[in-house]
Length: 145
Image (tube, rainbow, N blue to C red; front, top):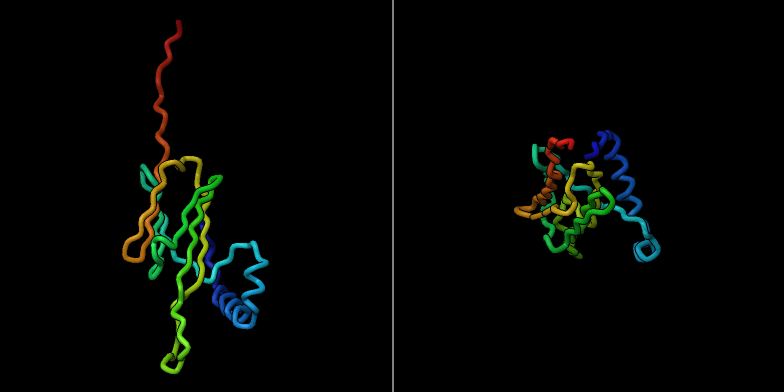
């Protein structure tokens, strides 16, 4: 599993992205961009046990059918989208803090991960991904004849 470095200026970067998004023409950039981007990043917990790796991602308000989890070349990718409420009236809002839009996370898995048996489930806004470890080959004695 890869570690993510704490970046205290991340809030300023997020503010810059929000300002850019506010002033850009979304229809033009969505059609021409092939780069996967994120509007928000779900928080994750990663735990290793004797037999498996566990990833818990906080994705409240996201329908499990809108979550894409796939594994390719030792990279586990989680992506999806949380729709925002499209209201034309903004009169009653004082502050909007809930993130909406697409999210995208990638994790590099170790060689001990069994990619064929990865499973995922979502319950109460938490995505749980279970990545079993490969069965260890037990040492055996080879008789010389």
